[in-house]
Image (tube, rainbow, N blue to C red; front, side, top):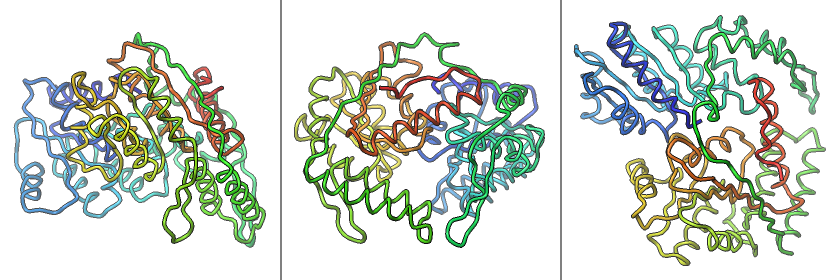
Length: 451
């Protein structure tokens, strides 16, 4: 992450176009990223001598957009046609069909999937639709800073999009049998195959090396260090009492195999984390705020922090509480939020203001799932995690918003952690997943979450 993958792809577009091999490119990227291709990556990196026509997908069907899209897809053009589509659109028939028609009508094309772990779930509709487009794309590329975020099985659909023979195995189940250790489990009346370990990872690494290029920051950038700190935030009596009650319920649900499901267990874990963050939401009832020290701990950290600061929080309720507390302490112009409800046309303005050294905007409060991809926030040298999720990709991506090209100072990462709670388990789980990813990718394990 942060090593210039987007520039390499835009350079590839330009070279293929000028050599007469393509006249069109389809760029697929997550919702929070695809605007960057239109507003930043293509304008900056594609040579000005190349005429281009760039259209960004819009989910709302309007006459103006339909005419713009028809003009791009159907009418002859001497320059390079670029259609930028958010990957979520491939979950819809209309979005996938628009991409297919673009590729079919412009067969000399390049198809790019940015942040390709968005298609790691082979069962997802969007993954199936993206992989289907392989049949009508001439050249294909995928980009990701972390191709493996949960298990080596993440690789299959990403590589399948590139070429069904890339890994030498065309069937997912054959791939799983080759590289995973599987046991049959029973839960209630249902039985299922559970992956309990992995094998032949050196062989998998060798296969990846034949068609993948991997560049680490230390290979090409002179970036400063990352520094990690944990700030302990003990639970209050109110939090501890509710936490203990909820933990008993979670254990009871887990032990009762007749009712336990992955979703139900994850819901219990999420509620434990919410309690650590200072609130609780009972089923179908309003959110209840709890007496807690986490928000005050955050404000204390901000008092000591120099310059601009990024604050990441998993829950929307936390984002709003953080925004209001910072606005009261430092002024409303000092803080902005960046999450799912932030209007699309305001997001880049928030980033631009944050990056502007003369702007009053000092605190960027974001949800990593939305703001952790594709944006540059190198104005900050302090990054605070008010809360984390189990998703390694989200953690790695959000970290590297500040630690990328343009950063010339050490970046300090501060995790707010309630001891002996799910907070510590989440950080440990992230570290364990990172170790597994390191085994497959052939790099040294980084203890970036170690205490």
